[in-house]
Image 1: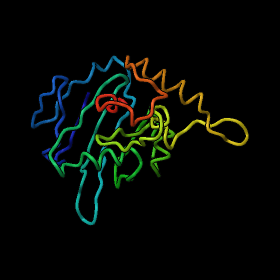
Image 2 (image 1 turned 180 degrees about the vertical axis):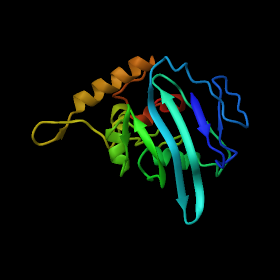
Image 3 (image 1 turned 90 degrees about the horizontal axis):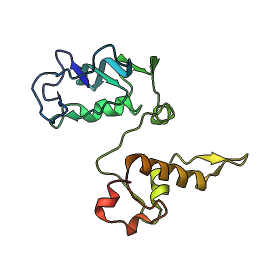
Length: 186
């Protein structure tokens, strides 16, 4: 992971090393440049609200397969950065590059179509829906000329997802019947 914060970025925003230690300065633990090009790059991202600068020239680079954590104090700009990346906010300055192409998301739906979504700490789940249905709420795959929801595909894709994660979770189970630990995987 590489997290570069330009001078003037909130000092409380820090990059975490793979071992979870945090420092007061940006840390560079990115793979050598000979490895894959960045799949995601933010450069000079600035976001202001009514005269307050929430993000000031933030730079972030992520390569395929990397795991990233954004750590900082309240008000450091973490949520603003995620909302900017996911199309909820548009940056006042700077650029976002995804897969080598410069992008500008006008909405969360545009970001989602490009494959960018956020997984929030506290998620809202629908107890009466199944595990698979909860995973695909708001983005159900459809089929046919009438655009009907493809329930079989939802279940099959949810099963594949849990197989990849090596998690044994029944995709047809209602969320209300899951343990607290199981709910964290949904």
